[in-house]
Each structure stands twice: as structure tokens, then as C-alpha cells.
Length: 350
Image (cartoon, rainbow, N blue to C red):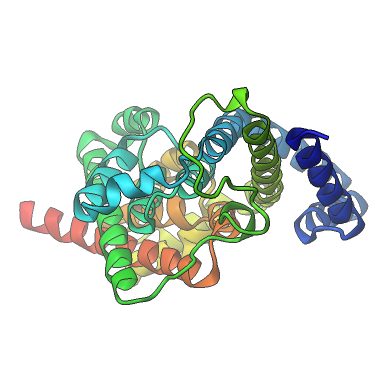
């Protein structure tokens, strides 16, 4: 029996064990749609359509990241990225925040890429900088936001994206150097749980030429693909319910004035009420016409993009509790600082 055949048999045995022991996430997805079908059948159909459309849209990104992570693992190069930037972490964080603010990824769409980066050994501070900055701005949103909300507001949000990424990266680096945040990743992407690595084998990019490396590629791709698929499907299913059941008028009633608590409340409301980057732009335009302060609008957009329920669930799927709580804390703190900073800048300029 070849190494490839033995590895494939081992992988199939692992799948059979998982089928005998139902996964909690898959079970939650099943129960969610069964409950909707029994109580609100129409919403069940709409949620199923929404989830399928969203997953099909993000599927190419998932496929690309799965192939990348599996290829790096099979090539024996899964630590090269980490080694390449570990010598200059301050510069790596800056580059990650800047690139993240310009990348074309939404809050959930960035997750597959982050998973591939973490699986490839990229240090957590640089990953955190990219992870926080990336959902906040992309080329399409920049153009639409500039046309809808004005160039000044759009530039302020772009600067906020970079600043929040830097805050997240450097704060994570400080905690990491203090001995905290060890083993940040969860099972399937952490290199553990029988990850089928190659040990100290030399790097070889042509993974298709060796049975052992092909087996590692197949096993890693299957494990990472199923892991990402189940969490993103659950996140999209929950997002479909928010789209259907969170009325924009309710949000406008809470955030339509210039109350002293408008910015903190915008951060809090932005977490569950944020839908996606494109849907949020006309909503914020409407709120600002109703009198919402620009600082509160910026806080809503930044907090919602990074910490919305679907995005937070996707983050929680990849990292352990301390890193997840740090992610939320940094995102909320950065959103507050961005909102107040923009409001102060407008007051000084005006």
C-alpha cells in the first residue's frame, strides 16, 4: 500500500468518525432551518436562498484559500511566511494594515484569506492588523461611499481603517511579547489534531510529484474546507435573519440625533444591526439626513464591519477565546476612537 493510499484511508476513517459523532455547527445549521420551516416557512425559503447566494459568492475565495493553505502545508513551507516577517514585526504590521485597508474583502470574505495566512505561519499581530483593517474599506465601497456620503467622509473612513489596523496589530504584539496569546488558533487550522505535516522535510513546491505530499495536500484541503464551510454557512444563515428582521427605521430612531451618547450607541448598535458594506452606505446616508452626527456614522460603519454577528462568528471559528475577545475589544475601542476623533477634527476644521 502506498503512502497516498494509506493517508486517504486514514482521512476517510476520520470522516466516518465525524459522521458518527455529529458536529455541533452542522447540527445548529440543520436545527435553524428546521425551526424556520416549522414556524415561518416563507422565511426559511428566503434564508436558504440568501445563504446559498452568499456562499456561492464567497466560494471562489474559500477554494483559493484552501488550495493555498494545503499547498503550503504539503510543500513544507507552512512556516516560511512567519519566518519572513518575524524579524521586522513593526514593519509587517504597518504593511498588513495598509494592505488590508485597500483589499477587496468584506467582513466575512476576509476570513478564508486570514485562515490561509494563519495556517501558513504569519504572525498573529500582522494577521490582526490585516483582519481588522480589511473589512472596513475596499475599492468598490470607496467609490460608492464617495458618491453617496462625500469624499471627506470616505477618506476619514479609509484613514480609520488603517489606524484601527495599526492599533490592533501593535496592541497584539505588545500582549504577545508579554507572554500572552499563546496558541491562538483552533484545531483544524492550528497544525494540530493530526495535521499530517512533513516534519523537517525540505521545502518542495512541486507537491504533485510525491505521494506523501499529495496525501498531505488532500487531507489539509478537506479539513480546512469543511471547517470554513460550516462556520460561514451558519454565519450567512444568521445574517439572513438580520436582513429580514432588523428594520432600518428602528435604527434611525435610535441614532437620528446628536445626543451625547450617539457615538457609543452607534458602536453598540452597529454590532447586530450592520448588514454588509454596500447595504450600510445608503442606510447611513439616510441616518445622516435625519441628523446623525458624522462621528456617530463613522463609528457605526467601523464597528459594524468588524464586529457584526456573522463576522464575529467567523472569527470565533478560527481562534481561541482570548484572541477572539481581544479582536472584539480592539475593534470596539478603535471604532469609538475613530468616531470621537472624526467629530473633533470636524469641530476644529469648522
